[in-house]
Length: 368
Length: 86
Image 1 (cartoon, chains in turn brown, green):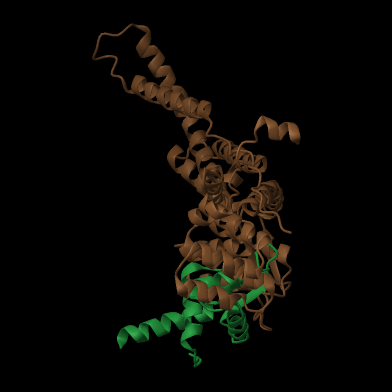
Image 2 (cartoon, each protein chain N blue to C red):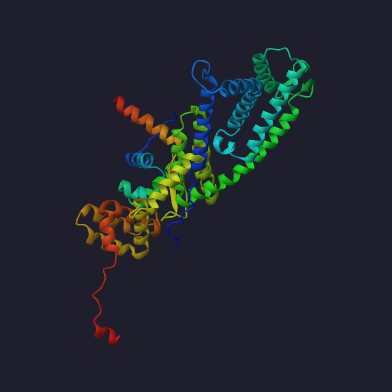
């Protein structure tokens, strides 16, 4: 017999880091205060003597530092954009990994080094143009492959061409980072799939959620949507093994909905599981209880006790009649679902719960 | 579109599956008032026609699960548009 017990609750999702938020708030506050201090017209108002000196020193430092800060910012933006486009379903999770930080850091350091070299070699260039040139140009150059010559009528990237691949080294590094980030994300994916399967164990639930996740996506083209639904249909196909179908459907939900959506689904399921009367669970429990405790004849009798509606009684009587087209499990399950729908969960629950007998008297206890 | 001729009962089963999602054949019986044997035979013929997908599911009380296919959804959409036009 199959168990219908509630799955255990998975560990709760980590709460947002409050310390990080407070830290960011103070950082922004310090930045605003620094800006206000720098823009403060000290010669117009009464201010201590040290203020103008500190202001001019700070302005001088900023003039030196800001170009480096500019190229570093551009490098960070490009690296983040690359990561987000490589992992479109999990951009936030991908950015949190160690190798994503390494990729961003390498981009920033390389951009700063390029600016230092440019400033040393062409010191007279306008600093603004230099920052834009290095910030954008360097990022483009390390990702570029120059084709110097190609045989006519051949495909791009084939053997019959002479090329200078300036981005080869960066490509190798990018590939390494992508693989490592993917491996780090695998652990989270497996956890999410396991949790989905804990709370949505039946193929029917998984299929419905996966289907509606696909059709609810606003950014999918009709062709993409069609392809994904066809892929989902192959998973419910009788040829696919049952456990493989379940795992793949859970993965489809995660891939199409993303981690935040899965978290929402899990929190919904957890709320239901923690509630006093989870409707879906109660219905399933009742059906299993009816199937396990009653024979087909018993179900006919139970129906006649529960209702006086002749249509319902007749349907149950006919459904319980032995025939070659179906098996007993199917007949009992159909009657059980039918009774839940027609009689109601509360009334059935009342009927199925054994009534406590009278309290045994002291004499009866002694006799026993 | 391929011509599909369906009886009223078959249409009712497909509409139930479209509205309520994937379910076990016994739930289909309970929702449509069709007898279990009749439902199973009908689902098998709909499955052969490519309108539903019927497979085993050990977690379902009757050991099976049935879902409507995209073809059947398109057909139902097409037929509902036609009935609206009438």
